[in-house]
Image 1 (cartoon, rainbow, N blue to C red):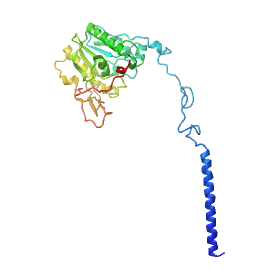
Image 2 (image 1 turned 90 degrees about the vertical axis):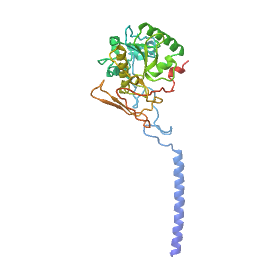
Image 3 (image 1 turned 30 degrees about the vertical axis):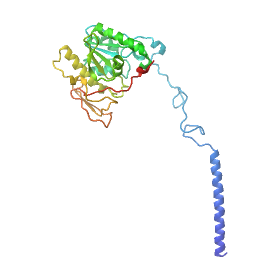
Image 4 (image 1 turned 135 degrees about the vertical axis):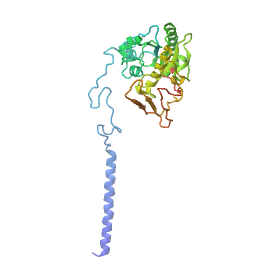
Length: 327
């Protein structure tokens, strides 16, 4: 066989090989299209991408999930009928005002009973009380000159379940309570609570310029003690506001001779979406062992230091409080 024949044979074999390869490849492609794609481990083939959801009430391994019983078998509808008693008396220094009782607090019969609420921890860290207290101790809080109440008495799952009518009527009842008991300071536990009470959108945390109508009761606005307070998620973040309240209380009682307004009005740091980068709290008044530093905020904002437990300009956010939009 000469060279020309070898080349021709090689060319013919190559062409036939290509044809066979092309035919084989085409068949594989067609078969591949017919076969369903194998999904991720744990999912059924041919039923979409990703892991298939487990039926509700089951763990990842398919076993039944244990239902968490918050109220020891008491139906939620029954808990909603429970009332949370005020802790009020005459000659109080401070009355802390919430919006209305939550389910857990009403069921337990004690204010701020939720395990995620920072109220009781911050109360002692700030020096407003001189010993650690818990929600079960709300019945003795009057001994420290502190009382507890709410704007609306009805228990609900959340504040969004309240109506405007309830809030308006509750505010009127609150005014009557404050006129009757005459504490030195009415403290609204959360900017949204004071917003619905006063109808104001722009105000600072701390001491307010006005007083409760017809009384000499001073008004103080506090960040919410809830752990769900996005701007101040830790107990330590809230301590300066309570420590400043303690100074104001001591000043009104005559235990503190001088007090500058900058120590009790938070008027430098803007709270519009909370553009605070760093808050450095000198913890000497409530924790001699530690200096607390909070850094979970806007990295673009200017640094701001809390000196002697005071802030600067805190202006309210325009974000509406949930129950302002209810029926």
